[in-house]
Length: 507
Ligand code: AMP
Image 1 (cartoon, helix red, strand yellow):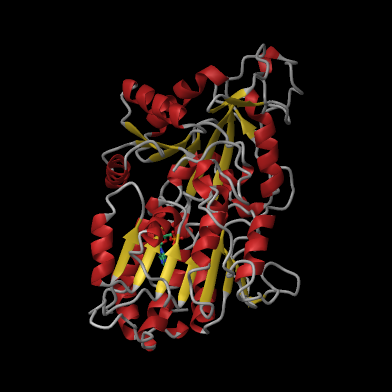
Image 2 (cartoon, helix red, strand yellow; image 1 turned 45 degrees about the vertical axis):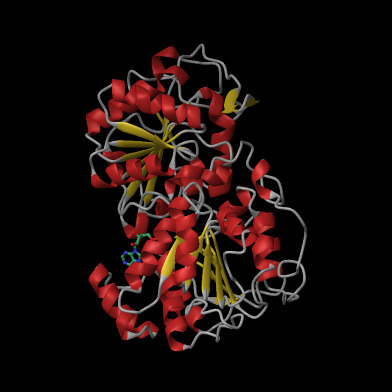
C-alpha cells in the first residue's frame, strides 16, 4: 500500500517521498483515513510505530482543505493573520520538539506556520512568535498555561486537538492542566488521543473528551514491540556497571540508551562509564534544556556512545533504529518498561532490550512479566553471576524514598554454587553477550506462553464498542470540556488524577 491510496494530497506525498518513506506503517494506514474522516480518534500506539505522521499528515491535509475561521479583533487592531487551528499537547519538551519538527518536515510544501512551545526557555521569543501568527502549535501543558495566564495566546479557534502520549501526561500529573486547557478550546472540534497504555485514568479522560471515537490499536494493550528482542541478565547489585562496560566493549556497541531510576543514578553511571573510557552523558529533568539538547544531538550524531536517561527525560527521544536499550535498573512502574524498550526496534527495525537485574528487583521483574504477558528468560554472563549470599535490600527511589522490590520469581545461580537462597532457577541460557540469543518476540514466550504482541499490528480500525474507552457520547461542556476547577494544580508533586508513579516528576 502506498501513501497515495490513503487520499493524501500532492504536497504531502512529495514531502513523504523526500523522507524516503515508501509505505505507511500500520498506525498510519488506520489513523490517516480516520482523521481525514473528521471524527474523534482513540489510538493505542506506542512511540516508534510512526504515530506522529499518523496524526500530522491528515491534520495538515484537513487544515489545507478548509479555510480558517475568520479572526475577530478589537477595532483598530491589526491582529495576527493566522490563528491557532491545531494544538498538539505532549508530555515533554523533547517530544514537543520532535513533533513540531515532523510538522515542518511533512508540511514543507504547504504554507502553514508551526511553533513549538515548552518551559525552561525564555517566554518572550515565544510571545513574539505567537504575535506573528501560528497555525499549528505543539506545546507542553505548563508553558501553554503560562501564556494563557499572561493572555498572550488565543485558543478559541482550535479546530483539532491532539493529546500525544496521553498516558504519560497523566503519569506526570498534567491532568488538571489538561482540563484547564480543554476549557479554553471551542466545544466543536476534532479530538485525537494517543496513548501507549490504557489505564483507568486514560479511559476516564477518553470518555469525557472523545465523541464516538474511531478506535485504533496497533500494538495490543501493554504489549511490547514485536521487533524488540528482550533479555534479562542476572547480576550482583554491585557489579552492574562493570557488566555494562564489559558488554559495551565486548560487543562494540556504539549507540546505547541506558535507563536508570533516578537522576542521581543517571549522573553517577555516566561519570563511571566515562572513567571506564566509554563516552556517556546523563539526560534528566535537572539538566538545562541546552544540556539535554546537546547530549541528544551528540548521541544521535554518533560522537556520544552512551546516553543515560531517566524515564521521563527519555520520553520522546526519537532516534531512528536505535539498536540497544539497557535497563541498568528496572523501573518500579511496569508500564515504564514498555515505554523504555519502545525506544528500540522503531518503525520495523530490529532492536535489543537488555535488563540488568539484581536480587533487589525481582518483584519489579515479575510485575513487568505480568504486564507484558510473557516470561523473560534469566541469563547470566560468566564472571558476573549473582553472589549466592546476597539477600534482597530495599531500593532507593530518590528523594529519600525506598521500596522493596526483591520478592519475585527467582534468579539463576551459578551452577557450581548449587542451592542458593532463592528458588535456584536455572538460567535459560548463559550466552551472555552475543546477538545469537535474540529471539523474536512474536514467536511465543520462552515458557511456551503466547506472546503478548502476537498478531498485534494491523487491526482494522473500528468504532469503539459501547462502554469501551471513549465510547460514550461526551457531554460537551461537561466534565472535560466544561469550565472546570480553579487553580493550577499539576506541578507540585504529581497531584491530580494521574500519578501512579511512585517517584517525583522529573521534568
Ligand atoms: P514515531 O512513532 O512517530 O515516533 O515515529 C518513529 C520513527 O519512524 C520516526 O523516526 C519516523 O521518522 C519514522 N517513520 C514514520 N513513518 C514512517 C514510514 N512510513 N516509513 C518509515 N519510517 C517512518
